[in-house]
Amino acid sequence: MASTSEATPQMQRYMEIGMDYLDRSGIKKLFKSNQAIYGLGGFIGLWLASGYLASFICNLIGFLYPAYKSVKAIESVNKDDDTAWLMYWVVFATFSVAEFFSDILLSWFPFYFLGKCIFLLWCMAPVSWNGSNTLYNKFIRPFILRNESKIDNVLSNVTKGAKDLVDQATKDAHSSFADTAADMASEAVKDGLKKDE
Image 1 (spheres, one colour):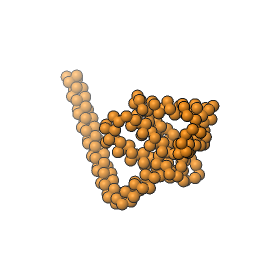
Image 2 (image 1 turned 90 degrees about the horizontal axis):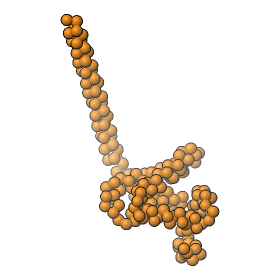
Image 3 (image 1 turned 90 degrees about the vertical axis):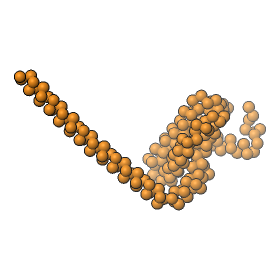
Image 4 (image 1 turned 120 degrees about the vertical axis):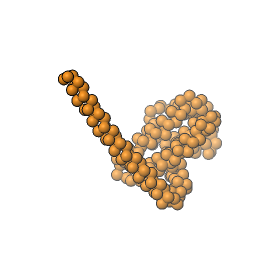
């Protein structure tokens, strides 16, 4: 395994960013040397490339740390971190919807889950140019602002339709319950009269 001094300057820069992230997150304290971190990273990378439980591990990476950091952001006084994690979840939700339709095809590609994990790690990276910030500001936000009134109308119609459906189902359930109770009472009275004869 090549040491960090033998890596290309660009790779060296990425490794330094990664190690700085591990230092700040406290993960590095769990290991005695950088080789253990590289080994663990390599092991997870190979595991993701092999496909066995790769989807589960990838979703675990995409949920656990961001969920924990989101709770910490909500509890903090600073609201900038709230915005950053809200952007992550908006990007994550958008990606999840897109992935729902393409996952059947994409999951057959080698290293798909490894690429997905790298994408999710880029989205949650603690840098200003992370994926969430970039994708939200360049694509999602302009799309939402351009189509906000149309989206609001659709959501209003769907909400009204869902409310009407629930109201009708509730009325039908109450009516059905009342009819069933009346039938049961009538049957009980008839049975009681038969026994008296």
